[in-house]
Length: 389
Image (cartoon, rainbow, N blue to C red; front, side, top):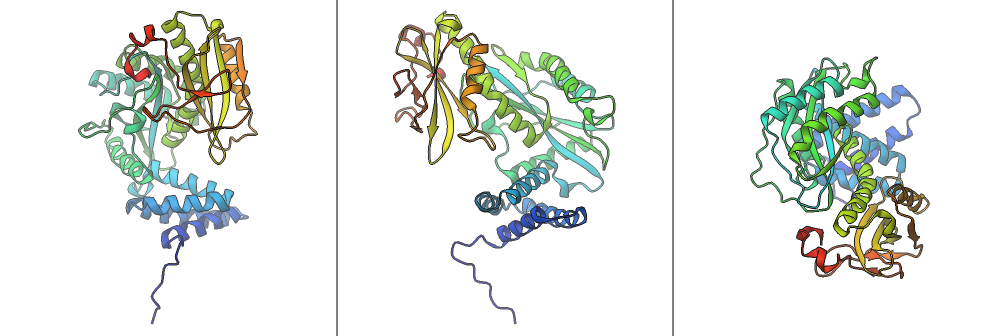
């Protein structure tokens, strides 16, 4: 008779244990034939757990491996993402992938999250299929520009959305998004909007244009920025926009996070130039590291040269493997100088992750080495939308 399995206090749980074991097996594999075995087992397990909405177990396994086995963590994270964005267990003889097309935008006014009209959707389909997708790909596009707050939350929700949009792609039709109950959109000077799509191809066929002999990523990126941008810009009135290459959902999201950092700095310099009527050469930027238990981000405080007040700020978060040994301050300074700033100050002591008690806004570094609330001069504040506070 089988003994009753008693869950260990503080243990991982059955599903997380299974996933960590499979991920460790794959990480330690020494041959392609062994890789194939572990990959098959891990894929089957993940398809089941994504279908059963085992979000917590997935995250427990990832958290455990992150602190114990870096290679196994990378393997598991890659597999979870790929199985989620491809809803792999839902399609028998086709490869389906959820695609994100990020749009970087900045504006002195609210950046909208809006439905995409049918005529614009039809034009976007043409440019997707001409510049982004391979010849045999079927396509579905969701008729909404999502803010980060409105994207599927978690791996299981992403897999469910990929399945829904993938089914539409199998029929070569678009997907209407029901916006009732959708989360409110946070307001920022610079933000990202996401156009989501799905592509379906017969198993083993190329999905993207750059997988074909006469295609390339650079060409796809350039054409999408020009042609796709012409379609999307009218949906974001009063905004300056830049497009990121459409790619599989998680890769595109990471690319958007990376590209949004210098974009936010450029947007802030442009915004301050118009709002305060000062050239970039009359601005000062102070760069400082902000720590919790480890370095989390850099913050940039902007002021007008000759004045002490910090009028605006930007957060530059660390991504991926970046840490305090990465020359992030040098990257930030290079962007600032490209924008025309000549007065750039680096502070190297560790600031705590402080936020305003009243409004929750980050506190930014001043030239005096203090953290302060960014405040525009009163005469400009009266003309600015509240969200710029």
